[in-house]
Length: 137
Image 1: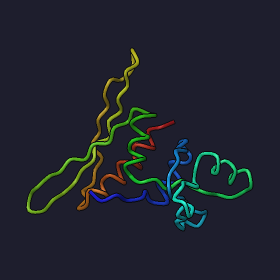
Image 2: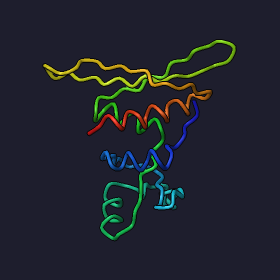
Image 3: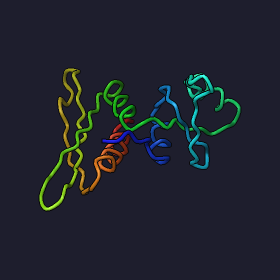
Image 4: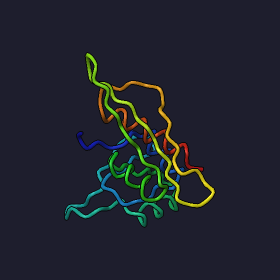
């Protein structure tokens, strides 16, 4: 698996769902990537800079790696993304978002296979991340 930034569309959705973790990149309103590391290697795109940009009328979207957004979904919303591999004549990937809730009287495990075949792990993970974000109200 190679580290990959989430797509602009996924970044827009993640923003509406409350993703605000510090990361090294962001997208501007046109979907252009902005490396947010200063000359000293320090993160510039932090929660504080995000709020400041919004207050000044700039539309910015955090652009974390897929694995960082996956960690946020797991740690904050108890949503685990699982990617399965099917090996036939060629390699295919499927994703299975699982909602894990420990609260009493709630669903303990929801697992759904979303239709689709992907020939790269990162493509399946991106689709899984997007679908998992849709679970969040």
